Length: 432
Image (cartoon, rainbow, N blue to C red):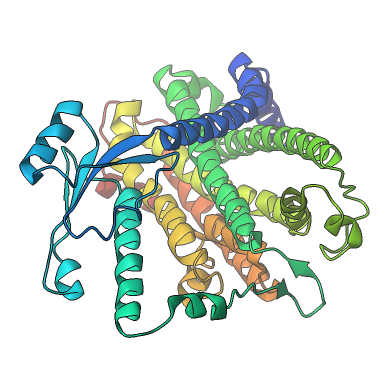
């Protein structure tokens, strides 16, 4: 037990005292925020670029319908011949030309409109063009049938569904998107932690094995203690880093809440009058929805599933490190390890977000190789306690089984040199 404690201490201090660890712990949140701001800036920059599109309308119905905006400027070339209009657009290097020919009916016109351009137009631009033409044709068809379109617009009802739970607490329409963001961020962060720190364990084992230091270490320490010491020590370093990020995130969120005039200690329901009296209700409601999330539960279960998932995969990484002589030899074993993590992310983003309590989401939140990621994505949407308990128990039992199998591979493979391990060879080690 004393040897295990010393190994854990050594591995932990080796990680947290590393200059790269210290720098990235405090720099990573800033890099993440910077990336988000950069993406937002580039999106705004992309949307602010104005395109010039020519209009060649032979019907004369749509000249006034295409109105300039911040993204698109329309130029009327209807008085020109079509070929001359095309050449004009090409010479001026405009974005494209819309050709609306004369047809015998509105039905034929819907299939006759053409967009000429050097490249295919973006989906947003194309949908906007189709909507303008479709709206005009619809109104024209209604007029031809003697229907007053102004009365239709006056009779059109605008419905704004208010979301409220059975306890009487209201939430905004952004609430589900916030849950998606927090669940997706937690699942993706967990996957990255597992890959990064799992690789640390594997590289540490390979380094000690190739340097022949392991031959000296195992003379006084059992291989299982060495493996568990590496896994636990590295996991504690990961938890330390995550805890620092939580503290920094909490400080940043408290500053934002103070800046927008919200006291997190007094907010119990988004229906409070103080929220309605805010100067910026949308931003206030957004912050309130965040505060109404089960943040404490999300953090607690993140730690639980991080520890469970990390131990599970780190034991596998340690066994792989013991089975090979160099990092290049690990490639044949890495895909089966990465595949469940990728599957968990895929299920999370395409199944959990669409239906967090569906059959697919529930099943994969119980399978131990995917449950740490999928369950974390489900928690913001509310998960019954018995499902959480069952998922944790299955994960814990699987951990014991995988650690036991990994230890058997580790104790043989750590002293094997010069022989390229195969799946068949590793299977034999399990029998020794």
